Image 1 (cartoon, rainbow, N blue to C red):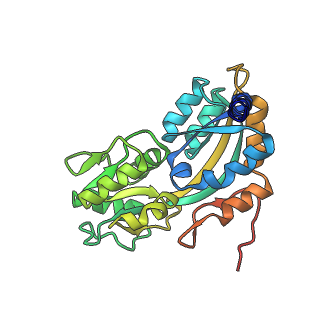
Image 2 (cartoon, rainbow, N blue to C red):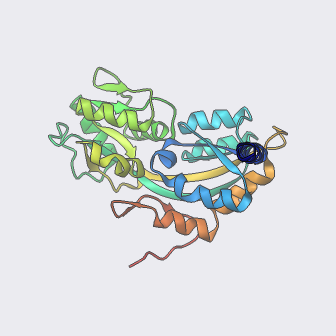
Image 3 (cartoon, one colour):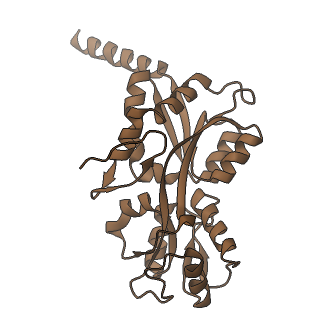
Length: 270
């Protein structure tokens, strides 16, 4: 009798779980690998009695998945691509969420001599001139899009044995750069999350060109009738709420803030 009761309870739990709504979110690897989503999604899931299914890929792939209607909402970091996504009718209700910045990491010997530079264009020119290893993600991610735009602003079309593409996510690209003693562009949140595992050091930072904003966009329900419009809207409202913005501001690694909220001004704890 007791065994039968256990089985019935287990079946009931499985049935309840199966009926729980699922919201599909495609997002960049930095929000996932940094651990931020583990901080900000659970309160939303509890309050709406649903599960957010996260697909962590590069920004370009996340937006392509969204274009096909395979997710309900995207959280990415490539503003020009985001605006194009909305302009072409694939997304609606885009909202700013947060920002951080990019940094250029490199080996301690610094063969290109860029340590301490504030001008990212000058730093990239020095890397190219010295033919020092530079590891690119090469995957159409938000970081890759930013990197390509930075090379263009520097007037350089990187090519040759010194310029390598990993074709992988940020964590794998960082490991490759570390092994090659090369330079690499990375968002600060991911760098801080993997800093203890790397020999690479932050050499170039602080240029306005390295600004890294994140936006959230609902997939257009007029284009894909099956997407969960109301739940996507609810997630956007949560991400831009004062409560979530405080959670974003309070999320730190090694005492360092990883992301800065864009919607609600949050006073920092003293």
